[in-house]
Length: 222
Image: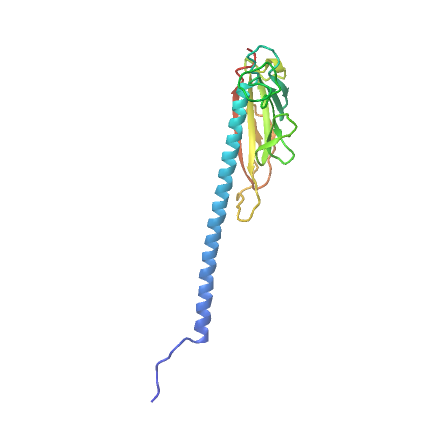
C-alpha cells in the first residue's frame, strides 16, 4: 500500500526558511545598531552640552570677581583683552592660598587667570603658575571675547572695560564607533553678539552648540 504522508522538509523548503531567517536576523541587527548609535550620539551631545555650560559658568563666576581689590592697591583688573585670549587678576586671598583674606598682592592661587583655547582645541584655564592651559571643555571650535565700556560700546582700552561678552562654539565631534554624525552638512556661519563671524561655515556633519552671555564685571571701575 502506498503511503501519502510526507515527513520532514525538502531541501527547497529548508533553503527558503534559512533565507527568511537571515532576513529577519539582519533586520533585528540593523535595528539594534541604529538604537546603539542613537544612544551614543545622545550621550555625546549631552556631554558636550553639560561640559560647555559648566565651563561657561566657571568663566562667568570668575570674571565677576575680576578686578577685586579690597585693599585699593589699584593693581587688579584686566591684563590682556584679546579677541580669543583673556587674562585678568583679582585679590581674593593670601600668597599661601590658605586664607580668603586679601593681602594686597596678586600672587596667590587663582588670583591670576587666563582663558584661551589650547593646542588640543580645548577651552583652557591657566592660573599662570607654570602648568599652562588646563582643559575645561573639549572640542571648542571658537572662543570669542568682546569688551564693552560703561555705555555698552565696544572698547579696546583696558581701563574702560566694564562688561565682557563671551561666545563659545563647541563641537560634539568625536568620531568613535557607534557615533552618528548629523544627516545634514553644517553650513551655519557662527557669529558673536556683535554679528562678527567667529567661525565660518564648517561644511562638515559634526553637531555644534553656540553659547553666549554678557558678564558685568562689577569690580572694574570702582
